[in-house]
Image (cartoon, rainbow, N blue to C red; front, side):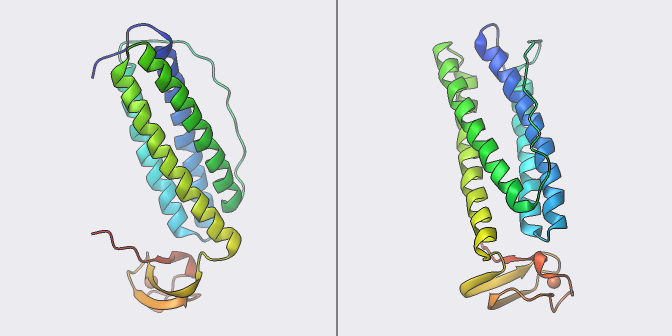
Length: 190
Ligand SMILES: [Fe+2]
């Protein structure tokens, strides 16, 4: 992967790299809180994002190869609250990230940094998906529909793999006795 020579895009990539590192840590903290709150699926989503954003950071790190830009960055700590609050913070974070990515992408095009611009465009598309998913997860918590639906669904136990059909998830899995938090609506995408 070629490196960036000189321009504002170099500083932007460095800033985005640091912001991604912040997000990686934050989502790891939020994953642990989701587990404490009994939301295993949300824990897994935050954990997966942790890995994915680590990869985004790696891409930016490679773009910075051989360079040593100096940038200043505001460190924001919203603290670690309950899962619903953490989801709301995450929505705001990702929306801010999308706005920044779009701004940096536009500048990268003007500076003829096509490779960087393309990566930033793809990253903002990923963040848009993150926002949609966070909003749905938060709404489920607010509406009390994480483990209770208004129609029959197939519940899947993340711990033992048991599947059964019902409007609500059982308080404990009959297969492994683990609590309700391990259930999620079965999704087959294979
Ligand atoms: Fe189970």
